[in-house]
Length: 215
Ligand SMILES: Cc1cc2nc3c(=O)[nH]c(=O)nc-3n(C[C@H](O)[C@H](O)[C@H](O)COP(=O)(O)O)c2cc1C
View 1 (tube, protein in one colour):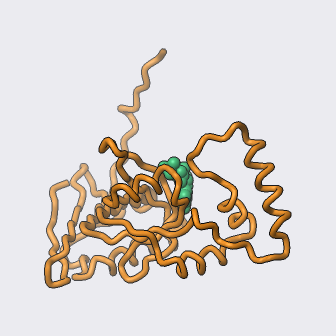
View 2 (cartoon, helix red, strand yellow):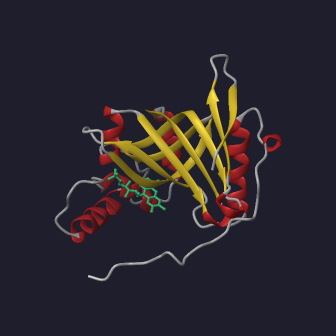
View 3 (cartoon, rainbow, N blue to C red):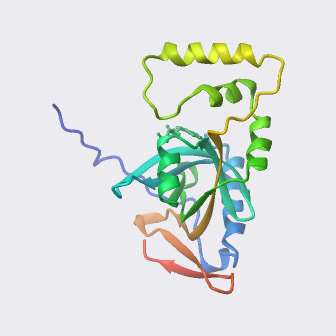
């Protein structure tokens, strides 16, 4: 098999910078600003975030989800509670999140603890989803083996007919996760790989400390 060489792919980052005066005392102000910037820049999937969990053996496990809300300083996403990630987060609630916006040469890293979102909030979001997404959430045993694509298509067709013209109830296996941050880092790409990094850590009195990190 041929090797692959990417040594010649090289971009310098030069769009933006971060200095201490750009960093508010509340990191969530910056989170809001950067998410808003990503939405306004029309990047593809501006709310996509990689969620890292661990297996029972302590091995890392990651996948992308879509951030749907930031509520009371918690990051909210929705998934299947019995999926691989769902089972992992139940066993070990320590998670890490990475937002990456190539177009803005930015990333945010969050480390924190996850909990299951209040059922009423999951219901409220579920009810806003398109009919097909609501039906899909009911029939997909996410992360579990299925015999063929036909299996899921047949289940989808049956369930779609069953609820046609009726309210689709949120299944108990599907809902929100809320991540409370214990560490938030902002990364802005700069020239010559001398990037700007600022780390926020929570203090006991509810404020956040701010530290510049080497690139
Ligand atoms: C852009 C993108 C957005 C996604 N959004 C979600 C999501 O919001 N919720 C979800 O459960 N899976 C989402 N997925 C699928 C997950 O990455 C993953 O395949 C799935 O949740 C199963 O993960 P698990 O087996 O680790 O539990 C998304 C995938 C991509 C590429």
